[in-house]
View 1: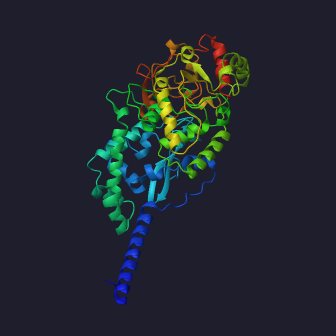
View 2 (view 1 turned 90 degrees about the vertical axis):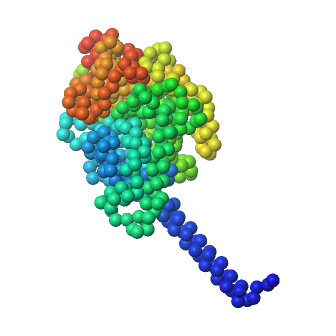
View 3 (view 1 turned 60 degrees about the vertical axis):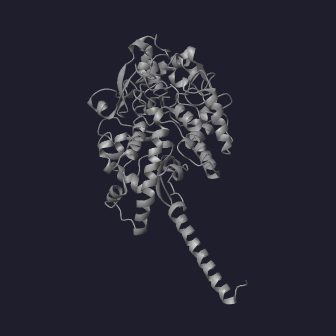
Length: 481
């Protein structure tokens, strides 16, 4: 049966109306959930390193207004007063977010992390002084595990509901009627479910009696293993310090390695895998951003020691350093950025044992399946000997941060401090490290006990038998590196 012209016109009008309606719905959905606004412009690459996107907002971003109000709703779940500052995050005066946090609009404003959350540090010469912020330094004050646990606990808490969250958002901004409904019925429930998923994803780090990472550390290779591979949860624990990432050109070359136990043979590989772990999407923009980060970190210099140095004493320490340290720690030296076998270095092996060749093989395959071509990760039996530029700001020392200062690095194992507080940023120029005891160190820091599994402070005994005067001279020289 053929349609009359009138019915055809009517059908056409209906089809056009449906197309317009469908297009309007599609545009609305795109505008509210997927529309990406350009990233803000930064004054320089250091600022972009601290606050710029690595592409993690779409998959791992927390809606900005929810992120803002969580500390207000869940004060009892935070380690202390001060909101997110209580996790030891670096927060510069006048900045909207802490260092290492990014904000981008993808439909709605979202907050995610970048590399600087673990790789921007602070120091002060005395209490009460405004912290000196050093991009690319280890974030020795940041309690990343505490922050992860906070978000997990928030996701489980019955107070995380639309009425409570919107009530707090109303105190800081005025959402439109439409946005308010989107938050109530979509964004808040989806965010809560995403936070709840993290509990199962990170259950391995929350086992009863399991060693805590503490301030300035994580469990890097277990994070990699359980995120990038299907390896079953095992009994390994590998808490390790956040390393400095300045002057990475000194760590490039044939046969040179990165990561504490030489798991990766290229700077670009470390950047790619770390960013993927933070939730970055593997696309052309991402690869270009990794190239930019590589260029910046390769050329960014180590910070100079900010306190007076006895030049004559340092001059006396130079030949001691050349004899005792340079072979493993001078850029370009035979053993620098190369593997020191565990039988020789004799430091705590737990971090090394977290990684396996099977994990490396699967991680390499997963990255390849994402369309990314990068040098493969490997498995080694020992630890890396890094260059010592800016070594004054890398305290505490050894891969797990179990030796508080450079003075104790030159002492026999039995004389090294067994319990101290790490994560306080007032500097101790006498011992060349951070203050590790006293009321303020206890209040701001985290208690490390070297007797706990993975926290051993044994090994690396080079210099332990030097005469006291030679130790003082070598220590003075190390300040100048």
